[in-house]
Image (cartoon, rainbow, N blue to C red; front, side, top):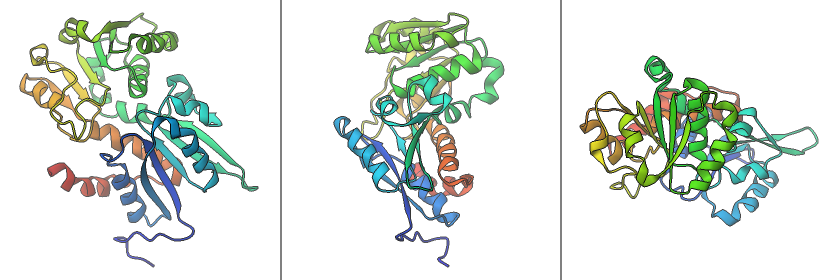
Amino acid sequence: MKPATEIAIRATTRPVVLLGDPVAHSFSPLIHNTGFRVQRLDYVYLACRVPRGALPDAVAGLRALGFAGANVTIPHKEAMLALVDQCTPHAQAIGAINTVICHIDAQGAVTLIGDNTDVIGFLEPLRPLADCLTGAEMVVLGAGGAARAVVYALLTEFRPSRLTIAARTRARAEAMATDFAIYDTRQALQIVSWNEAAPAIRRACLVVNATPVGMHPHVEASPWPHVEDFSPGQIVYDLVYNPVQTRLLREAADRGATTIDGLTMLIGQAAAAYQHWTGHTLPRQAVQAALQPLLQG
């Protein structure tokens, strides 16, 4: 038997892949391959850059090549809906997919099942703060696939009194508000343009960055560089995880805000996907140890 420190690639090894553009920054291969190695599972995780127009071909490859599944990231989470055979209730409600499970039956027929584990990962660090978040005012920066998971999670978990979506593309935000109207029981949703978001941010208990702004290699960028709008008592949550401490989080912390980085969400959503593919629980302690050198760097 191979020692647990080695990864063995065999003819029986089933691949899992991250589909996105870009993917070079991703920690997902390290997270999942650490789990496979520690638990001696016959899988391997790869990251593949897939431009927008190539997504259907990539999905056809999942069907043809015996993949166990996939993760889906920017810019494909919404487009993936039309390419799978089935969706879980979460994915259907959100209108975005971040995880695909490839089910192969006894006759070799492949069924692609789309799920959204972002909700689980996103809520994980917020649930201990439920007392102050329930019924509070909130702001979400962005209106893409990640933002859809965030808005759905906040509406269904905390029933905010006001949930402001700040979007550069108003039509996407309006479509999201229409899709989620059934969950907006307090008529909390409002849409503002990016340059109109400052009053809502100043009032908000929770501000969430659901855009990729500030992600490696553009580490000096911030989705909201107006640091005077942050204050003690606020929670600022950045879904970007590489770098872990983004400019947004550093500047919000300097103003006294409580900050939450994207790494907790990343590991939480990864654990749910890992369970789907393997039937095993992600060994989080080993994953954290594997990530530590990168976080220190």
